[in-house]
Length: 92
Image (tube, rainbow, N blue to C red; front, side, top):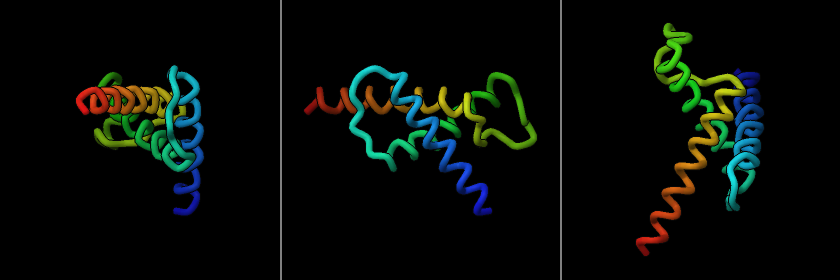
């Protein structure tokens, strides 16, 4: 169980940092927020993989992805976060 948690944290950190490098603009995220971004991205990537390829259909819709899927999901999550932040600041 401890190994799984450490793996999730490491993959989350890598995916979050790579997503921040790939998405242009400044993101005001702490290290913890970057790791959370990567973990959320992993589940977004898992859902996309399930929807597109029906890969690991036995595991269900809500599942973590590998590192590539995690990075793709983290980029999507970061873009959504930036969009919502811009939208909320425009309405203020």
